[in-house]
Image (cartoon, rainbow, N blue to C red; front, side, top):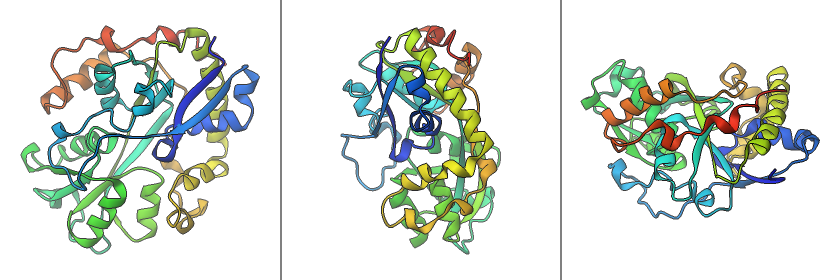
Length: 304
C-alpha cells in the first residue's frame, strides 16, 4: 500500500478535488492510514495570450507534475483525460470517474448583445484548449448553431475575462469559482451545463491504496452534500489575491456544486466520447479502451 499519496488539488484543480481536500482536513485519510498532500498544476509550454489552433497546445501542459512523477493522481474532464491517458509518457491510466460533476457556463460582458447561444454564430469564444471548458463549449453550442459557426480561441481564464470585458471576444467558458466571480461582476450567463470527469493515476497507485482513498472520499462527499456552504472557503481561497476578496459563500448558487460517489468508467462511455472527439479531430484514431482505462483499481474502492 502506498501510504503517502501526492495529488493535484490546488489552484484551478480545487473544485475537482474538493472531497479529497475535505477528507484530508477532516482526518478521513488518517483513518485509512494515508498521508495525502496536494499540489498545484504547473505547465512548461509557453503559449501566446491567444491561440487559435488547438493542435498547437499540449493536452498535458497543465499536468506536468504527474508526468514528472511528482504527483500520483489527478482529476479532469472526461474528454481531456482520454487524450492525456493516450499521450502519457509514464503510464498514466484512467482508473474511474471523478466525484465532481462540474458546472460550465458561457458568459458575456454586462449588457452585451450576446444574450443567447444563437447570437454566438462566428463570434470568438474564449476557452482553454483540451480542458473541460473547450469540449463543453463545443457540445453546448452544437444544439443551437452549426459546427462551422463555432469560433473558439485559447486563452487563460483571467486573460479571457478581460478580453470579454473589452470586447475582444464575445464570451468565455467558466466553471466555479470563476463563474461566481463573473456573475458578481455583472457578466451575463448565456448557457450552462454540467459534465463528468475522470481520474488518472500512475502505476504505483495499487488497488489497496485506491480503495482506501475512495472510502475516505465517499465519507467526505456525504459531508459536503450535507452542508455545501461550510466548504466553500476552499473554492474562494483557490482564487488569486485581489479576486478572492470579491466574493463570499453567499454569492454561490449551491445547486451548481454536485458531488457523487465515484463509479467505474465504462467501455460504452469511452466509445461514445472517443467517437465524438475524433469527429472534431481532437484526438488520434487508434486508441483502444483497454490501453488507457484500468478500472481494476476500483473494484473494491467504493465500499464505505
